Length: 338
Image (cartoon, rainbow, N blue to C red):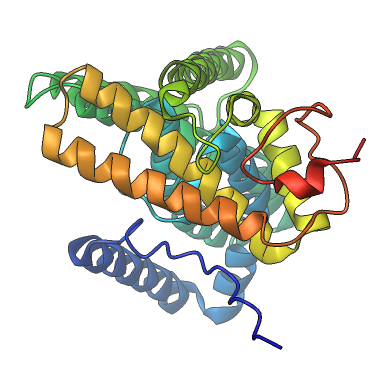
């Protein structure tokens, strides 16, 4: 008997290369954070510093999950370490990560200081800064992230003013938050009202950017319709966050973990393809860069779809009607299925 053909392998090495300077800066920032924690431990002793670190870490997982959920379409983008800033989604997510790191280090110091005044002071500090501090710090840095996202969408330096505006907004809100320490009553309520209003503005911008990305997908991807790349029902799936999630779940349960990863890469490549088309239509990229990005995205989409359809699924994809075609299902697997 002839040997079975090798299973397709998804090659994503062309995507998501992290630049060396970025890694060096990241390492330097981590070193500074470690030195700050070491300084706190030296001044108060290892036990209080450890307690403060654990308390500072408590709210981080929940807030991190919230940050990663903002426009779920960018979760794979973040996990794959993309360096492009392409809209409010990216600006808010990346900047929020930085803000959470700042908040954790600052809270360690604040909690160590509070321990010196007793358990009551420690509880009050944790309730006031340990829980809300990371949220507000993420909000502050998001202001800068929005400015960077706006500047990235403009040619040259014409949008750099937005970064300064974002920085001023971040400083103003941070000053307001820091000044609220020790306040009670109307003054504290006013501070929280302003911060919540700013948070709502950021969320509105994120939702608007989500709709912008969906509009890109429905506008540009139909021109690449091909049985091996994308079909109309697949575009419907790509334009819905709920159907994207169901698609990954379907791939995991019916084909396997490798198929789920391939589906994630497919969704990411399709989103990047739509964004590249949008930048090209606005004249924000060169024709050479657009062609390279387009071809890489299409190649990755083909490879990912091949990985998913390498095995016959156990059930029909949830975004397809019985007669719909999809790049993830072989024609022989569709026959007779309901």
